[in-house]
Image (cartoon, rainbow, N blue to C red; front, side, top):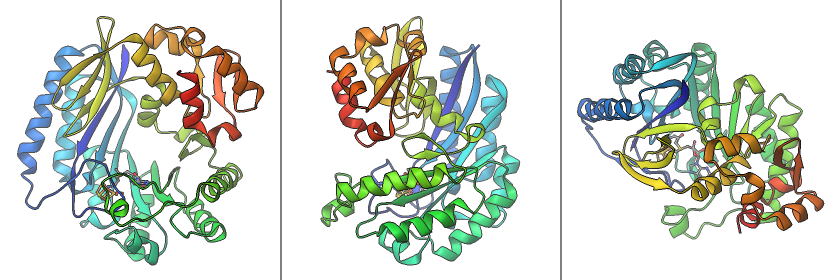
Amino acid sequence: MKPLSVYFHWPYCKSKCPYCDFFKLVQKNVDQASVVDGYIKELDYYHQILPDYCVQSVFFGGGTPSLLNPLYVERLINHVLSLWCVDKNCEITLEANPNSNRHQMFSDLKHAGVNRLSLGVQALNDQDLKFLGRTHTLVDARQSIEEVLTVFDNHSMDLIYARPNQNLDVWLQELNEAAHFGFKHLSLYQLTIEEGTVFEKKGIQALEEGKAAEMYSKTVEFLRHNGYPRYEVSNFAPASFESVHNKCYWQGDEYIGIGQSAHGRFKVRGKHYASVHPHQFEILSHDERAEELVIMGLRLQKGIEKQHFKDICGVDFDAFVNQDKLYDMVSKGLLVDEKGCVRATDKGFLILDKIIENLCV
Ligand SMILES: C[S@@+](CC[C@H](N)C(=O)[O-])C[C@H]1O[C@@H](n2cnc3c(N)ncnc32)[C@H](O)[C@@H]1O
Ligand code: SF4
């Protein structure tokens, strides 16, 4: 049976962080029972069109899914289990904010079936937490970190770096602290100033490009020597703790998305579909799907396996990409093309967007 991943988007947040452009709603008294009823109906719908799959991962993302009552998390997980065959090592992740921590929330989530917790810490000092508009303090973060590490065997932490005026040495100290808590996985994102966000409206500038690139290179190097090899642009973990769910997006595997703004990708009778909640479908051409696979696949350290690429989209990698540009970028040491795989080098990772643009013209 083909593998399938399931994404639930819980869009509700306590407040809006000034840098965030993810789909979210700040709303009091959410009728969680009705929203979850709608999600259950969506699962039933998708099961009818995609029955013969084995679920390899479930992800509760947001928004702030740690605001969802663990009893509803359990209901959704159990419904997935009742519909599909589920891999015995199925990864079930939930993203939590440090201060949505009600009494025993983490153990309740574990009891609900969550087996991987991703904690949105974002910064390890109060001044930067405040700058990022976070509603948690360092004390909240430390308390949640301790609980997550005690309750779960598999866990990840998110941090945002390359903050305006952030100094490399100070960041490396923070990174050193982050790398020694004992998380199995780290997601480290450079602060981007997104259109329409409060940061953009206030004219906050991202860290200067050269400084940000240096910070990225030093981050990758530090983590490589401290047990967290890069396996994707912003994600670091030993091979056994790479995120099954997120790799599904980067490798072009099939997934369904449930909850406002969630999207999916799957194949039915040879046709590729892009979906947006609630089950609105668009057919993608083979070339459109191939382009997506280049964009996503090169984010991975291992890059794109050409045979896997062809198996998914039916298009030959070498026929699809611009061969002159590929050759040029290989000779400049930006890409490696060997043993049926194309991957970015350390130098290439610094200008990945440009590389992808060149390959797809
Ligand atoms: C959609 S957020 C949800 C997680 C959770 N609500 C939280 O705030 O921790 C997923 C991650 O994206 C990252 N992120 C969101 N906006 C970003 C931005 N403009 N620049 C860098 N990272 C960002 C944050 O690290 C965040 O943990
Ligand atoms: S960063 Fe997280 S908590 Fe903040 S607005 Fe975005 S989704 Fe909500």
